[in-house]
Amino acid sequence: MGYCDADDVKAEFKELDTSTDDAALTDDTIDSWITQADGLIDTYLAIRYMLPIPASAKQAKQLLKMICSMIVTQRVRDKLEVKQVRVEGKQEVRTNSRKEAIKMLEDISTGVLTLIDVPLATSAAGVTSYVSSNSYERTFKRGQDQY
Picture 1 (cartoon, rainbow, N blue to C red):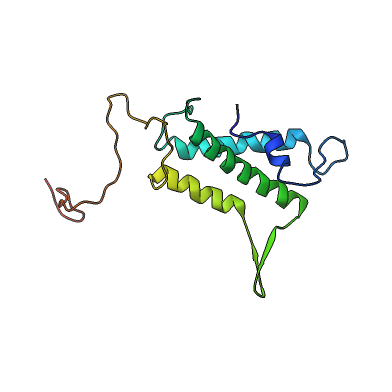
Picture 2: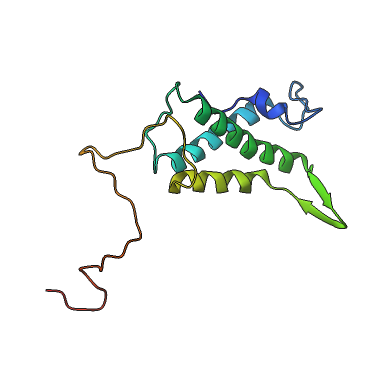
């Protein structure tokens, strides 16, 4: 099951018709994009969390639903050549929800954002490894003979 469905994506658009054969987008196309977005999301999540996300992690699932919907919605906008524009003063700012979604996924994978009630990924031996900044001097140094 995907993080979002076609109805979630279509809810972002007032008049998106996918039911006719001559429609600009079909439900199959949107479902395919959702599957691709799910794969992208899973690649970021797998760095830090155990997959699949448990059903009990309702807040995490809502966040991932929003992220998946943002990614697919941007693809629909691009396909339809519809740009969402906000006017701030005299300047037009185009929003790109895919970039915002990718930034959130990067923050999740690095631990800046935390998925509540989702177990962290560990190796088979039960050891988690990650890069950490600390004050310890490294034993092995670049550019020096160490044997």
